[in-house]
Image 1 (cartoon, rainbow, N blue to C red):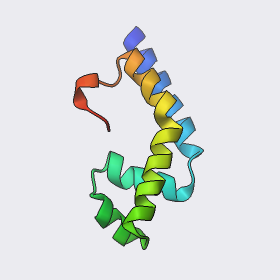
Image 2: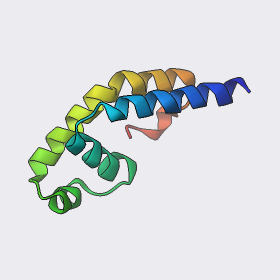
Image 3: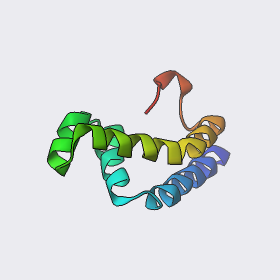
Image 4: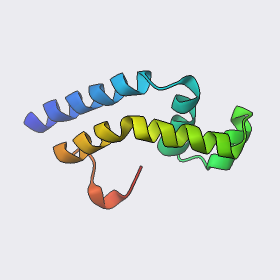
Length: 84
């Protein structure tokens, strides 16, 4: 039961932080980090340069870094999986 509560709180924390991202940051994060779309393909579909998409993705990851760390500490993210 405790792990379910931790996971629920972690999920809510992630959603609260994702809402604070800019629209472009949220879109590129969703396409690349969540859906696994290649950055170049995401950029093309978004109508932006790949370098611009890379900046949006980097800024989104930076904005969520502390949440990522908290999820690791809660055991929600497996540290052996690599950066997602």
